[in-house]
Image (cartoon, rainbow, N blue to C red; front, side, top):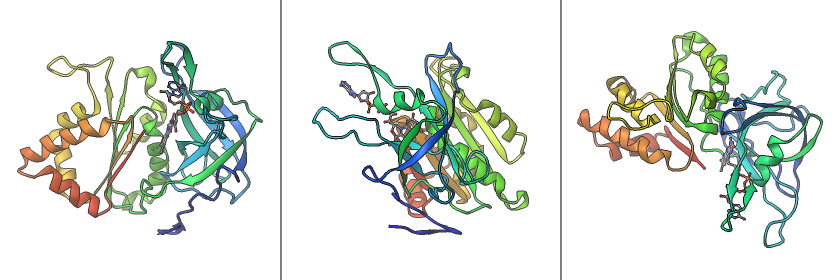
Length: 293
Ligand SMILES: Cc1cc2nc3c(=O)[nH]c(=O)nc-3n(C[C@H](O)[C@H](O)[C@H](O)COP(=O)(O)OP(=O)(O)OC[C@H]3O[C@@H](n4cnc5c(N)ncnc54)[C@H](O)[C@@H]3O)c2cc1C
């Protein structure tokens, strides 16, 4: 199924688990410093021209080798594409993903590792990987330059917003609305792509607000989360809600949307608005997008 999305059709699932596109690893660099408990990698892969026509906000799938507990081949795990449609080098033959190494304890207390994330974090330049997708049609960036974009991310949820920002910067400056990224992470070391955001923030229409949950506290002594920063933004954020020009995107850790909705509800109430009604209007207008995992 495909839908026309501005100048380009949304390509969906051109490659599936049984018919993947083989891509070559070009580069793999760790984004978080070694002392940071969270290990996140920026992995760039290459494919033939025209083979993987993705849009900003779509994901790519990667399957770990082997079989699952039921003896079936491991299924692909999705990763948001962190590059704009022209890829990492402007040729449209590369894309990057941003992968957190998953480590966990089994019920019996043994250390275990997530299959796909560890495969990707350990991938070496030159390796060939089977890739599926492009996946997802609800979280893509619309070709709507004058609109305002409110982006709310935690952790690797910032990956699609890197792609959004790259596309947004391609639109003529005089036609562009505003982009405001709220980014919640534990520490400064976890602030993925911090140098890129700092460079973007030189554009007066791009704004960046961090929430460092392990390094900052709220006035009443709690950990600082995205929703706390949203409440602190108060009237300014409310203006974004009210003018009907904003597209709102939430991406990151499952459950983050709960606190964010509570912050929106509190802001709406201050302005005499009913949050469920506002959200319904945003959703009906295709301006409310959530991708959590
Ligand atoms: C739309 C979408 C976009 C995403 N984008 C990103 C992204 O940009 N970056 C990113 O890093 N991730 C992203 N993810 C998450 C990603 O798809 C994977 O879920 C994640 O990397 C873990 O996969 P894995 O194969 O490493 O872990 P798995 O091996 O699948 O394990 C995942 C979890 O399952 C549990 N588990 C598995 N086996 C056992 C067991 N034997 N006993 C107990 N518990 C067990 C553990 O809790 C473990 O943490 C995205 C997900 C979605 C749906």
